[in-house]
Image (tube, rainbow, N blue to C red; front, side, top):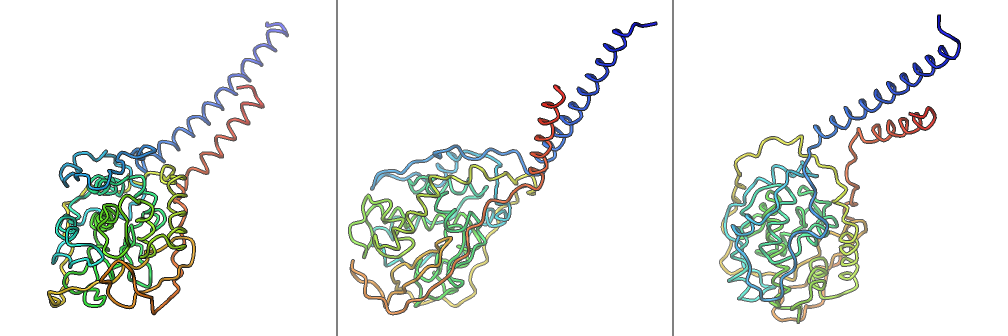
Length: 358
Protein backbone atom coordinates (compact mmCIF):
# COMPACT_ATOMS: atom_id res chain seq x y z
CA UNK A 1 0.00 0.00 0.00
CA UNK A 2 1.37 3.40 -1.01
CA UNK A 3 1.85 6.22 1.45
CA UNK A 4 -0.12 9.46 1.32
CA UNK A 5 2.87 11.50 -0.04
CA UNK A 6 3.31 8.91 -2.78
CA UNK A 7 -0.39 9.11 -3.71
CA UNK A 8 -0.19 12.93 -3.83
CA UNK A 9 2.87 12.82 -6.04
CA UNK A 10 1.20 10.26 -8.31
CA UNK A 11 -1.84 12.57 -8.63
CA UNK A 12 0.33 15.55 -9.49
CA UNK A 13 2.11 13.47 -12.14
CA UNK A 14 -1.21 12.48 -13.75
CA UNK A 15 -2.37 16.12 -13.78
CA UNK A 16 0.86 17.25 -15.44
CA UNK A 17 0.45 14.48 -18.01
CA UNK A 18 -3.11 15.63 -18.77
CA UNK A 19 -1.91 19.24 -19.14
CA UNK A 20 0.81 18.17 -21.55
CA UNK A 21 -1.63 16.04 -23.54
CA UNK A 22 -4.07 18.96 -23.73
CA UNK A 23 -1.35 21.32 -24.92
CA UNK A 24 -0.18 18.76 -27.45
CA UNK A 25 -3.72 18.33 -28.77
CA UNK A 26 -4.08 22.09 -29.23
CA UNK A 27 -0.70 22.24 -30.95
CA UNK A 28 -1.68 19.43 -33.31
CA UNK A 29 -4.97 21.17 -34.10
CA UNK A 30 -3.12 24.38 -34.93
CA UNK A 31 -0.60 22.50 -37.07
CA UNK A 32 -3.44 20.83 -38.99
CA UNK A 33 -5.08 24.19 -39.61
CA UNK A 34 -1.80 25.68 -40.80
CA UNK A 35 -1.38 22.75 -43.19
CA UNK A 36 -4.93 23.28 -44.46
CA UNK A 37 -4.35 27.00 -45.02
CA UNK A 38 -1.08 26.40 -46.85
CA UNK A 39 -2.54 23.65 -49.01
CA UNK A 40 -5.51 25.80 -49.99
CA UNK A 41 -3.76 29.09 -50.64
CA UNK A 42 -0.40 28.18 -52.11
CA UNK A 43 3.14 28.48 -50.80
CA UNK A 44 4.79 30.96 -53.17
CA UNK A 45 6.96 33.78 -51.86
CA UNK A 46 6.04 37.44 -52.37
CA UNK A 47 8.66 39.65 -54.08
CA UNK A 48 11.45 40.98 -51.91
CA UNK A 49 11.06 44.53 -50.51
CA UNK A 50 12.73 46.91 -52.94
CA UNK A 51 12.04 44.71 -55.94
CA UNK A 52 14.45 43.28 -58.48
CA UNK A 53 14.78 46.01 -61.13
CA UNK A 54 15.73 49.66 -60.78
CA UNK A 55 15.11 52.72 -62.93
CA UNK A 56 17.68 53.08 -65.72
CA UNK A 57 18.94 56.58 -66.68
CA UNK A 58 17.35 58.39 -69.65
CA UNK A 59 18.56 57.07 -73.00
CA UNK A 60 19.77 53.74 -71.60
CA UNK A 61 19.94 50.68 -73.84
CA UNK A 62 16.96 48.51 -73.01
CA UNK A 63 16.96 44.71 -72.76
CA UNK A 64 14.87 42.51 -75.03
CA UNK A 65 11.71 40.57 -74.24
CA UNK A 66 13.66 37.32 -74.06
CA UNK A 67 16.42 38.75 -71.87
CA UNK A 68 13.85 40.03 -69.37
CA UNK A 69 11.89 36.78 -69.42
CA UNK A 70 15.11 35.05 -68.33
CA UNK A 71 15.73 37.64 -65.58
CA UNK A 72 12.30 37.37 -63.97
CA UNK A 73 12.41 35.97 -60.42
CA UNK A 74 9.95 33.12 -60.70
CA UNK A 75 7.56 32.30 -57.90
CA UNK A 76 4.09 30.69 -57.88
CA UNK A 77 2.92 33.50 -55.54
CA UNK A 78 -0.36 34.84 -56.92
CA UNK A 79 -2.52 37.16 -54.78
CA UNK A 80 -4.95 37.73 -57.68
CA UNK A 81 -6.01 34.34 -59.06
CA UNK A 82 -8.83 36.05 -60.97
CA UNK A 83 -6.12 37.43 -63.32
CA UNK A 84 -5.21 33.91 -64.41
CA UNK A 85 -6.81 33.95 -67.85
CA UNK A 86 -5.58 37.45 -68.75
CA UNK A 87 -2.12 36.56 -67.44
CA UNK A 88 -1.96 33.73 -69.97
CA UNK A 89 -3.45 35.57 -72.94
CA UNK A 90 -1.23 37.02 -75.65
CA UNK A 91 -2.42 40.01 -77.71
CA UNK A 92 -3.27 39.76 -81.39
CA UNK A 93 -4.78 41.84 -84.16
CA UNK A 94 -3.58 44.89 -86.11
CA UNK A 95 -0.56 46.91 -85.05
CA UNK A 96 -1.20 49.93 -82.86
CA UNK A 97 -1.83 53.29 -84.50
CA UNK A 98 0.72 56.05 -84.05
CA UNK A 99 0.84 57.96 -80.76
CA UNK A 100 0.99 61.66 -81.56
CA UNK A 101 1.77 62.59 -77.96
CA UNK A 102 5.22 61.10 -78.69
CA UNK A 103 7.72 61.99 -81.37
CA UNK A 104 8.72 60.03 -84.45
CA UNK A 105 11.66 58.38 -82.68
CA UNK A 106 9.38 56.95 -79.98
CA UNK A 107 6.93 55.65 -82.59
CA UNK A 108 9.75 54.07 -84.59
CA UNK A 109 11.68 52.50 -81.73
CA UNK A 110 9.43 52.17 -78.66
CA UNK A 111 5.94 51.65 -80.02
CA UNK A 112 7.17 48.79 -82.17
CA UNK A 113 8.44 47.00 -79.01
CA UNK A 114 4.98 46.87 -77.41
CA UNK A 115 3.94 43.24 -77.85
CA UNK A 116 2.82 41.83 -74.47
CA UNK A 117 4.77 38.69 -75.33
CA UNK A 118 4.93 37.12 -71.88
CA UNK A 119 2.82 34.94 -69.62
CA UNK A 120 3.12 34.18 -65.92
CA UNK A 121 1.79 35.32 -62.56
CA UNK A 122 0.69 38.91 -62.06
CA UNK A 123 3.97 39.78 -60.32
CA UNK A 124 6.09 38.01 -62.92
CA UNK A 125 4.40 40.10 -65.62
CA UNK A 126 5.15 43.28 -63.65
CA UNK A 127 8.79 42.23 -63.35
CA UNK A 128 9.09 41.39 -67.04
CA UNK A 129 7.67 44.71 -68.23
CA UNK A 130 9.68 46.73 -65.69
CA UNK A 131 12.87 45.03 -66.85
CA UNK A 132 11.97 45.56 -70.52
CA UNK A 133 11.49 49.32 -70.09
CA UNK A 134 14.20 50.00 -67.54
CA UNK A 135 11.69 50.85 -64.82
CA UNK A 136 11.38 50.03 -61.13
CA UNK A 137 9.24 46.95 -60.59
CA UNK A 138 8.30 48.13 -57.08
CA UNK A 139 7.07 51.39 -58.57
CA UNK A 140 4.88 49.47 -61.01
CA UNK A 141 3.50 47.39 -58.15
CA UNK A 142 2.63 50.57 -56.25
CA UNK A 143 0.98 52.24 -59.24
CA UNK A 144 -1.04 49.08 -59.90
CA UNK A 145 -2.27 49.21 -56.29
CA UNK A 146 -3.60 52.74 -56.88
CA UNK A 147 -5.08 51.99 -60.29
CA UNK A 148 -6.69 48.60 -59.79
CA UNK A 149 -5.41 46.87 -56.63
CA UNK A 150 -3.78 44.49 -59.13
CA UNK A 151 -7.07 43.39 -60.70
CA UNK A 152 -6.83 43.13 -64.48
CA UNK A 153 -10.65 43.01 -64.74
CA UNK A 154 -10.94 46.61 -63.45
CA UNK A 155 -12.86 48.95 -65.76
CA UNK A 156 -12.92 52.68 -65.00
CA UNK A 157 -13.65 56.13 -66.40
CA UNK A 158 -17.08 55.20 -67.70
CA UNK A 159 -15.92 52.09 -69.50
CA UNK A 160 -12.90 53.65 -71.25
CA UNK A 161 -10.00 52.58 -68.99
CA UNK A 162 -9.01 48.94 -68.59
CA UNK A 163 -6.78 46.63 -66.69
CA UNK A 164 -4.02 46.60 -64.14
CA UNK A 165 -2.79 50.12 -64.99
CA UNK A 166 -6.06 51.53 -66.38
CA UNK A 167 -4.99 52.14 -69.97
CA UNK A 168 -7.53 54.41 -71.63
CA UNK A 169 -8.24 53.33 -75.21
CA UNK A 170 -9.52 56.83 -76.09
CA UNK A 171 -5.97 58.21 -76.01
CA UNK A 172 -3.54 55.29 -75.95
CA UNK A 173 -3.51 55.64 -78.92
CA UNK A 174 -6.35 57.84 -80.18
CA UNK A 175 -7.92 56.34 -83.28
CA UNK A 176 -10.52 58.15 -85.39
CA UNK A 177 -11.62 60.51 -82.64
CA UNK A 178 -11.65 57.81 -79.96
CA UNK A 179 -12.94 54.74 -81.80
CA UNK A 180 -12.84 51.71 -79.51
CA UNK A 181 -12.84 48.79 -81.94
CA UNK A 182 -11.24 50.39 -85.00
CA UNK A 183 -8.05 48.94 -86.42
CA UNK A 184 -5.07 50.33 -84.50
CA UNK A 185 -6.91 50.66 -81.16
CA UNK A 186 -5.36 49.22 -78.02
CA UNK A 187 -8.69 47.61 -77.14
CA UNK A 188 -9.44 44.71 -76.57
CA UNK A 189 -5.81 43.76 -75.86
CA UNK A 190 -5.52 46.17 -72.92
CA UNK A 191 -8.50 44.41 -71.30
CA UNK A 192 -7.74 40.81 -72.20
CA UNK A 193 -3.96 40.63 -71.79
CA UNK A 194 -2.26 41.70 -68.56
CA UNK A 195 1.19 41.70 -70.17
CA UNK A 196 0.04 43.95 -73.02
CA UNK A 197 -1.59 46.36 -70.56
CA UNK A 198 1.57 46.80 -68.49
CA UNK A 199 3.85 46.75 -71.54
CA UNK A 200 1.99 49.63 -73.22
CA UNK A 201 1.86 51.82 -70.12
CA UNK A 202 5.57 51.42 -69.38
CA UNK A 203 6.48 52.14 -73.00
CA UNK A 204 4.81 55.52 -72.51
CA UNK A 205 6.49 56.10 -69.15
CA UNK A 206 9.91 55.36 -70.65
CA UNK A 207 9.18 57.64 -73.60
CA UNK A 208 8.25 60.45 -71.23
CA UNK A 209 11.30 59.82 -69.04
CA UNK A 210 13.54 59.85 -72.11
CA UNK A 211 12.11 63.24 -73.18
CA UNK A 212 10.12 62.09 -76.22
CA UNK A 213 6.82 63.86 -75.47
CA UNK A 214 5.52 66.22 -78.13
CA UNK A 215 3.49 68.46 -75.81
CA UNK A 216 4.50 68.15 -72.13
CA UNK A 217 7.73 70.13 -72.43
CA UNK A 218 11.03 69.05 -70.89
CA UNK A 219 10.19 65.71 -69.28
CA UNK A 220 13.60 64.05 -69.53
CA UNK A 221 14.70 62.45 -66.27
CA UNK A 222 11.58 63.46 -64.30
CA UNK A 223 10.18 60.14 -63.14
CA UNK A 224 7.45 61.54 -60.86
CA UNK A 225 6.40 64.15 -63.38
CA UNK A 226 5.86 61.37 -65.92
CA UNK A 227 3.87 59.28 -63.45
CA UNK A 228 1.66 62.26 -62.67
CA UNK A 229 1.05 62.84 -66.37
CA UNK A 230 -0.34 59.32 -66.67
CA UNK A 231 -3.19 60.45 -64.44
CA UNK A 232 -3.79 64.03 -65.55
CA UNK A 233 -2.51 64.16 -69.11
CA UNK A 234 -0.69 67.33 -68.08
CA UNK A 235 2.60 68.29 -66.47
CA UNK A 236 2.86 68.71 -62.70
CA UNK A 237 -0.63 70.06 -62.12
CA UNK A 238 -2.26 69.84 -58.69
CA UNK A 239 -4.15 66.76 -59.89
CA UNK A 240 -0.91 65.17 -61.10
CA UNK A 241 0.84 65.78 -57.80
CA UNK A 242 -2.12 64.43 -55.83
CA UNK A 243 -1.96 61.24 -57.87
CA UNK A 244 1.79 61.05 -57.31
CA UNK A 245 1.25 61.29 -53.55
CA UNK A 246 -1.08 58.26 -53.71
CA UNK A 247 1.50 56.24 -55.66
CA UNK A 248 4.28 57.26 -53.27
CA UNK A 249 2.15 56.21 -50.29
CA UNK A 250 1.49 52.83 -51.92
CA UNK A 251 5.22 52.48 -52.62
CA UNK A 252 6.03 53.16 -48.96
CA UNK A 253 3.31 50.85 -47.63
CA UNK A 254 4.06 47.92 -49.96
CA UNK A 255 0.72 46.33 -49.10
CA UNK A 256 1.34 43.48 -51.56
CA UNK A 257 3.92 42.02 -49.18
CA UNK A 258 1.07 41.12 -46.83
CA UNK A 259 -1.26 39.67 -49.44
CA UNK A 260 -1.81 35.91 -49.06
CA UNK A 261 -0.76 33.59 -51.83
CA UNK A 262 -3.81 32.14 -53.60
CA UNK A 263 -1.92 30.05 -56.15
CA UNK A 264 -3.06 26.78 -54.59
CA UNK A 265 -6.45 27.13 -56.29
CA UNK A 266 -5.06 27.72 -59.79
CA UNK A 267 -5.07 25.12 -62.57
CA UNK A 268 -1.90 24.14 -64.39
CA UNK A 269 -0.57 26.82 -66.72
CA UNK A 270 -2.31 26.53 -70.10
CA UNK A 271 -0.83 27.21 -73.49
CA UNK A 272 -0.93 30.99 -74.12
CA UNK A 273 -4.12 32.16 -75.80
CA UNK A 274 -4.49 34.94 -78.33
CA UNK A 275 -6.99 37.77 -78.10
CA UNK A 276 -9.46 37.67 -81.03
CA UNK A 277 -8.75 40.47 -83.47
CA UNK A 278 -11.25 43.29 -83.84
CA UNK A 279 -13.87 42.68 -86.52
CA UNK A 280 -14.21 46.37 -87.34
CA UNK A 281 -13.25 47.65 -90.77
CA UNK A 282 -9.71 49.06 -90.98
CA UNK A 283 -9.53 52.75 -90.15
CA UNK A 284 -7.89 55.38 -92.30
CA UNK A 285 -4.13 55.25 -92.59
CA UNK A 286 -3.59 58.67 -91.06
CA UNK A 287 -4.27 58.51 -87.31
CA UNK A 288 -4.76 61.44 -84.99
CA UNK A 289 -4.41 61.54 -81.25
CA UNK A 290 -5.13 63.91 -78.40
CA UNK A 291 -3.49 64.43 -75.07
CA UNK A 292 -3.64 61.37 -72.83
CA UNK A 293 -6.52 61.56 -70.43
CA UNK A 294 -6.34 60.63 -66.73
CA UNK A 295 -6.22 57.07 -65.59
CA UNK A 296 -8.36 56.18 -62.63
CA UNK A 297 -7.34 57.42 -59.18
CA UNK A 298 -8.32 55.09 -56.38
CA UNK A 299 -10.12 56.21 -53.23
CA UNK A 300 -11.31 59.62 -54.41
CA UNK A 301 -13.65 61.13 -57.03
CA UNK A 302 -11.75 62.48 -60.02
CA UNK A 303 -12.39 65.29 -62.45
CA UNK A 304 -11.37 64.35 -65.97
CA UNK A 305 -10.70 67.09 -68.49
CA UNK A 306 -10.89 66.09 -72.12
CA UNK A 307 -8.84 68.06 -74.67
CA UNK A 308 -10.49 70.14 -77.34
CA UNK A 309 -8.52 68.70 -80.26
CA UNK A 310 -5.20 67.18 -81.25
CA UNK A 311 -1.94 68.48 -79.84
CA UNK A 312 0.41 69.74 -82.50
CA UNK A 313 3.00 71.37 -80.23
CA UNK A 314 4.23 71.18 -76.67
CA UNK A 315 1.52 73.37 -75.10
CA UNK A 316 -1.95 71.80 -74.63
CA UNK A 317 -5.05 73.67 -75.76
CA UNK A 318 -7.70 74.75 -73.26
CA UNK A 319 -10.12 71.97 -72.39
CA UNK A 320 -13.74 72.24 -73.39
CA UNK A 321 -15.45 69.37 -71.56
CA UNK A 322 -15.17 68.47 -67.90
CA UNK A 323 -16.78 65.42 -66.35
CA UNK A 324 -16.54 63.99 -62.87
CA UNK A 325 -16.03 60.29 -62.37
CA UNK A 326 -16.20 58.47 -59.05
CA UNK A 327 -13.83 55.52 -59.48
CA UNK A 328 -13.98 52.27 -57.64
CA UNK A 329 -12.58 52.33 -54.14
CA UNK A 330 -9.39 50.37 -53.63
CA UNK A 331 -10.22 47.29 -51.64
CA UNK A 332 -8.20 45.65 -48.91
CA UNK A 333 -6.38 42.40 -49.73
CA UNK A 334 -8.67 39.42 -49.15
CA UNK A 335 -8.35 37.75 -45.76
CA UNK A 336 -8.03 33.99 -45.61
CA UNK A 337 -11.12 32.61 -43.81
CA UNK A 338 -9.07 30.31 -41.56
CA UNK A 339 -6.52 32.79 -40.25
CA UNK A 340 -8.83 34.31 -37.63
CA UNK A 341 -9.63 30.88 -36.23
CA UNK A 342 -5.93 30.07 -36.16
CA UNK A 343 -5.17 33.23 -34.19
CA UNK A 344 -8.00 32.43 -31.76
CA UNK A 345 -6.62 28.95 -31.12
CA UNK A 346 -3.18 30.40 -30.56
CA UNK A 347 -4.52 32.78 -27.92
CA UNK A 348 -6.38 29.93 -26.22
CA UNK A 349 -3.22 27.82 -26.14
CA UNK A 350 -1.18 30.68 -24.67
CA UNK A 351 -3.81 31.33 -22.01
CA UNK A 352 -4.12 27.63 -21.19
CA UNK A 353 -0.38 27.19 -20.76
CA UNK A 354 -0.04 30.38 -18.72
CA UNK A 355 -2.77 29.23 -16.33
CA UNK A 356 -1.73 25.57 -16.08
CA UNK A 357 2.03 25.92 -16.45
CA UNK A 358 2.45 23.76 -19.56
